[in-house]
Length: 201
Image 1 (cartoon, one colour):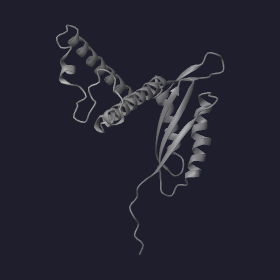
Image 2 (cartoon, rainbow, N blue to C red; image 1 turned 30 degrees about the vertical axis):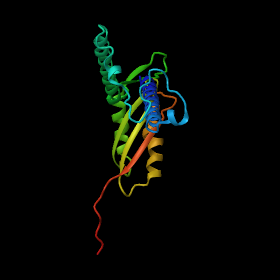
Image 3 (cartoon, one colour; image 1 turned 90 degrees about the horizontal axis):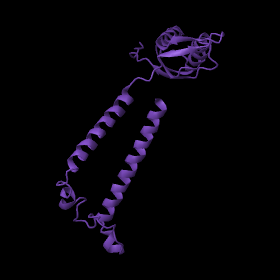
Image 4 (tube, rainbow, N blue to C red; image 1 turned 90 degrees about the vertical axis):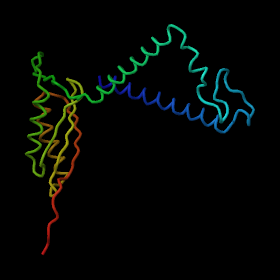
């Protein structure tokens, strides 16, 4: 699902960019009256040729209204556009956390570990590290190739390099070993807690 969503986002970005570039070039050509100045002809049926012209003339906007297929096509197209937009929006907002992780039990059968349980264990162990005030963990990726995303709130006195080292060798490594995974990639984001200024007398 994530790969499909990335492809859709890139395609929409590319399509939007091409439309904006095309509209900008068309507006520039018409506003500067380039067809008359440079002596080239615009495509047949193109109404935006000079600075005083509009993109769609009245005849262009109303020529299909008398046709029986016009309004069903318009309504159907707009409805489809709304449904696709809602699907895209919900896909962006949907949590992409893994519901379960496949655990290699060594007997060829395997087991399933709840993703939320793994997140809670890693978060609890991360919060037990010196200098870590709070930890939030999210499990993404695929069931047999999960990835960890960690957000750590560290105290001002914490040493970030020591926190990251112990996080990797303890919390992340323990989770990887307990799930029987060959690798457990993790990305940690550290943020310092705010504290009031101290008065020195």
